[in-house]
Length: 157
Image (cartoon, rainbow, N blue to C red; front, side, top):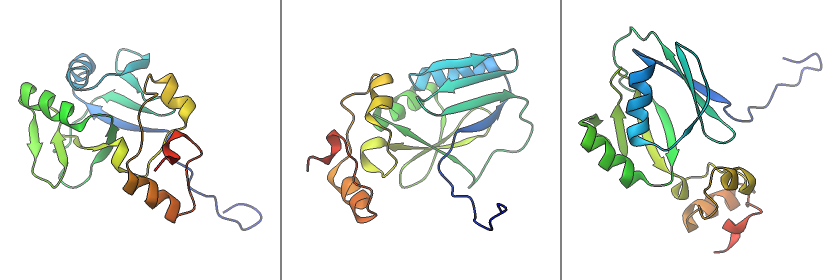
């Protein structure tokens, strides 16, 4: 608690760290599935840039594969991810959506940007080369219902 007794408000996620067995292999695996640029790199770490957020890959995973604990990633094309996973022979986890295990047992869930409330500003999308990415009507309505109507091109319904 702060000195005034007020609690801090959760604002978002800056990054998520995933442990992997080998940085080069992890970059090859993720690079076969997703388009991304590296924010930074060392011998045992790599940082996958997602505009205003990032994923930190850290060498040294030694625990059992994840069952229910997972990371949810947002993409512009979930079908493309599914095709890439099948080509790689990755383990797809039975679910209502698209879940998979990376070679080190990290459970990753994939959702499409247009279908969820999570939003990036137009400036961030433009910087990522995703100027045309928009929300569907249901996601926009869910945002409106919370008083979070985006002041962007997505407000056209």
